[in-house]
Length: 202
Length: 267
Image (cartoon, rainbow over all chains, first blue to last red; front, side):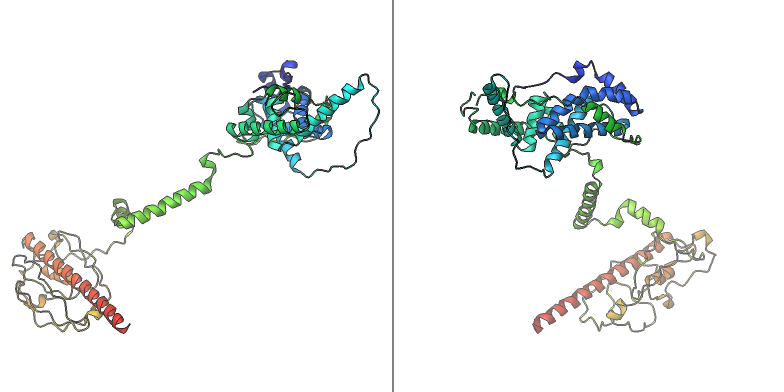
């Protein structure tokens, strides 16, 4: 199974490692704000990605980011390195926070956003790309929560099936079943919108 | 279905970059909260999976307790069905032996019997056999004709002739069954403690007693009598007691059968 859109690890980008994270978390547990700020800066993009893909809403995704780091600060003294390290812990907290938000009743406005003329060059191509993105986003958002979480974690975050199953609290077989059903639903949805042929190929 | 086509489309689902001040806001929000003190025996902060089905057994006390209770009850039922008497188990017997009250030590009168005296229920009168005779087989006792009018028992041809004076008439069996239990006979003292006494008349008619304890006491010979004779007397008394017990049980069965017959006739 292909992993698409896996972003570069934030830890590697910022030169962080497990040992460094443990030391930082020890200091955070002692109340060191600077160490905490370093950790937040390092992991914010990853938490934001997960939250945005799960929720499809930038504002809610930022709320989730804040909630996750508040939990990290409050529980820093009890934190111990286990499983996927701090990154895995943050992914787990973010995923669960998103699932909690998805279960709440949400306010949906009937009014559409006003159309504005696009002044960019090759506006027709940009409009096509935007429509395609919107269709893909709508198809992903139409998935059941757990199927969407499984696809976000494994496709976009590059998390192994075992770790994703651990985050979602299911067996690996159940996670694989979620992935298969999610892909089938996505294929049908995108084919219905004319973006994907039924037999294959866009 | 083509994975590549789907994956290419999924690439379009890319998030916008987060706000520039998102990290700063998150830090400010977190620092406004107090940190929790470290818990003793704290598990890792990593939350338990939401659908955790793999908790160890030790964290399920209700389940473990229920299983233990079920095993205990089913074990007791199985033991009952198998006919195991719990009070015959060595451990239970030892505990019961420790907790049972001990009889007061009687004054030294007679040598100790070879077997421990059984605290028997109410027993009908038993004839004291002459101690000089050899132990005879327990006489077979025929079923009594009626439960409420037990005739005086005829002496068995194999049993020795009664040596005592005529006994008072026995009460009906029902009354005998309701007779309160007598206290266990006092334990006789060791032979060394028995004072020297003249040889007791062996076939004394007054030796006829009303229960086994009396029989034992009478059967207890004077000092110097052989131990075998004493043992024989006690065994004879035990046999008589067992025979009488069997007779009582048989009588009860007869009563039950009669009741049943009466009920059937009435119906």
